[in-house]
Amino acid sequence: MTESPTPVTDRDLAAIVDTSPSPYVLVGEGGRIRYVSATIEDLLGYPPDELIGRPIGHIIDPAHWEAANAAYRALRDPERRKSLSGALGLAVRLVDAAGGTVACHLHPVSSSRASEGVLALHIRPGESHTRLGRAIGAMARGEAIEATLQHILDFAGEQTEHSDPVIALGFDGDRFEQLVTNRNRPRHELHDLDIDSARVPPTPWEQVLTGEPSAAGASTDLPEPWREKAIDAGFSACWAFALDRARPHHDVLVVWRSIDGPPEPHLLQHVDRVTQLIQLALEADRHRDRLEHRAATDELTGLANRAGLNARLQALQSDTESQTLGVAYVDIDDFKPVNDRLGHQTGDRVLQVVARRLAATVRAADLAARIGGDEFAALCPNISGDDLGRLAQRIIAALAAPIDLQGQVISISASVGIAVIDPAELAETGPDALLGRADAALLRAKAEGKGQWVGDDCRLPS
Image (tube, rainbow, N blue to C red; front, side, top):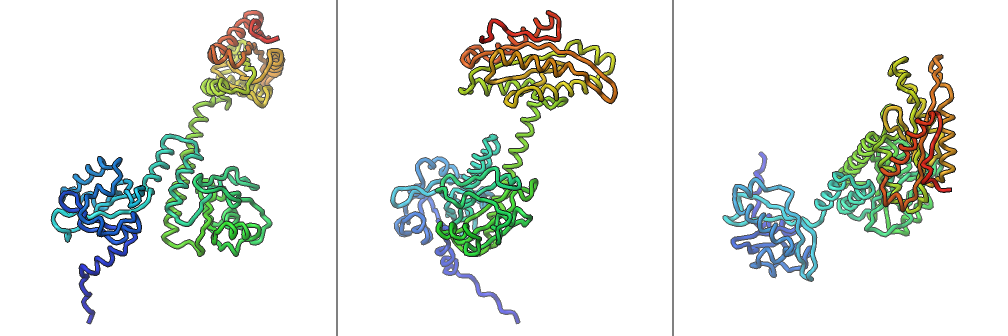
């Protein structure tokens, strides 16, 4: 026969509650504490007996009283209490015996065994929900990826105690392009992850880069100099996890642990949650970059479009190191007959050749753009009027070379208008004035015979 299970007594339940690392509180009529488990002293420094009979507001930071009162009123309703049980809880700061505050969450607990009018609350210390909210908010606002990853590291530090995580991004076959460390922890040598393909045994992050989804090892098993560095820093273990499914073996999460041993199942769950957050942040950032690039790029030629040109102008407007700023406006002479005679598809191919030649002619620091139709521009920081004139002449020569499209030879010419301005005047007049002067010079070039360049002479420095 199977023995009947021994009924659980109130004494058994009290023993469980009193030894729970996260304290429980029973709140009665008038919001006064009727019971609090013993571990409240570990969290807030109050002996349990000292809190019995006091209002629950005694241990809640005054800044959170309004939110706590609203939640308390909702939880006094038995039906609402049942629906709210198991919710994420109210993020508050609780006041400890020394007058400081501790970040916690108050979670309602519904039970049919509770006395009438008694509300049970589970206190869970930590700011994990707040930190998680900051990370998600940073993604939604489109903050810089490093700022978002810092919020995730804040969350990771609480999820995996006794750990110092490092996010290593963009392995290019030789090194990581970016290393993100927790700003709240002192930086040390272990944050600078180097790579040595000949190192034996390989470090955990090197194992991940060669194809392993994860790797872990004790500090004593690490190759030198990492073994000595880890031991000196007080770390007993090192874990590494592949981060981004979209770019396998490029991005790695490295976790230095002050407690030895391999990752346990509950810690692996926490790490998995963190890696998913990082993956989401990286993909959101790349998606945002793709959208911004698409919005600033001409689809036909791959050059910057008018929006991209304006964005670069605005950036250069606040560049204190820029001494002058020049613009060359380029227009293909009599391009309409090319479209009418050979068709728009051929015309588009001609524009693509023009774009490639323009991009190859301007300097590395310059921005080549297609403004629309058969109009192009080159934005040139730190250039004199004389140098911009010489650049305009090179552009005209480059575009005048015959274009061979599978045996069909097409000849074109271009007119160019140029203008130069200094940053102080640019800040005063704005980018539109510079573009307007270059455009006016272009109209003069076309009116005076085409196939030539004209400068905004009254503005060009000698």
